[in-house]
Amino acid sequence: MFQELTSRLGGALRKLSGQDRLTEENVREALREVRLALLEADVNYQVAKDFVARVAEKAAGQQVWDSLSADQQVVKIVRDEIVDLLGGETASLNLSGAPVATVMVMGLQGSGKTTFCAKLALRLLKEGRSPLLVAADIYRPAAIDQLETLAAQAGVPVHADRERRNAAQIVKLGLRRARDNKCDVLIVDTAGRLHIDTTLMDELAAIDKAVPMDEKLLVVDAMTGQEAVTVAREFAAQVGFDGAVLTKMDGDARGGAALSVKAVTGRPVKLVSTGEKLADLETFHPDRMAGRILGMGDVMSLIERAEENMDQQEAEALAERFLQNQFTLEDFQKQIRQVRRMGPLKGIMKMLPGVDGGLIDKSNVDEGQLGRVEAILNSMTPTERRSPEIINGSRRKRIARGSGTNVSQVNRLLKQYRDMRRMMRSINAAGGLEEFGRKVLGGRG
Image (tube, rainbow, N blue to C red; front, side, top):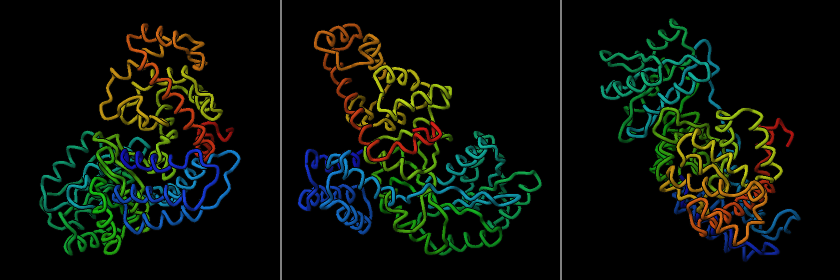
């Protein structure tokens, strides 16, 4: 996701590299490219226009800070504005309803709504909750069948009634069943439509009246771009919702929906679906998403996933080295060995700072490519991995022979490592690793 947007924004901001001072002229030139990048990503026109205006106001004429070059200063301003555009703070689900928290999931047909219901149920189950799914689509038997199939995979019960033709009544009976069976979260999969109509909105309002909802979530297909924002605006105006869910973010999502929903509707994005598996559901963190969009990776999410595959002591040691900008090829070698246990390689690589530079082609990532990188690292001596600057021409030839690769592949790895170190310095200077330190080191960073 965001690959094209990331590339375009990176190119625009690199135009400021080497400038001693931000001027109205060079800022205007770079921001013209930023605006085009946002529009090509299908960001709402007014949102893109206002965004660029705010960045220009903050950047023009500012003196370069001692710790940041001109381009890094603009990166920080752009990053901060993207975070604000995405909602600023992480928005949590409201599941405080007692004894049963109620969640209504809405969306158009084909948005991934039913699959999301099962993903949410699995997520809550892992968190120690006891969810019950309700099949409230009275028009499509196939939707009920799909929900039951997915619920069985997640290990979550479903309340379904193929005889009743009243969705609100089905939900009321589902709530009674949840109470009787001591379930503490009710997730209602409502009917979808190919388009927004009065019947759909009236039915949603009737369900909400029969069983007041603690949380109303609107599922939108991120691949539909600006159309997703239009749908969100209509739902916000006619029935209201508390938060959006972006699905199909693992596809060719240009980013417009993620960047526009909050600004257009006032409702935050709360969750994102990042793959086909039921476990592929993430909390939407505006600051982390801004990092991904700007090619800074998502160190926090990477570490959270890594913590599931390594002990706390290893995680803290890695965190300390990130914060101190002491990440070496030896650390990278250890991480490569962990990657195979952390899920699909494409999902992992996009979280690493600077990987968009080309060390691994994310469009065709496979174990063979990763294996070649690991072979190059294994062919280095411990001293070379700790101090890559000593690797001269003869050493590169030896490493290439020992790893079954060629010198150009060794050079590419070393260049990517240098790019990664520079990117980490930029992130640290812009404050992007502060939350990382608080999370992993308890604020010691």
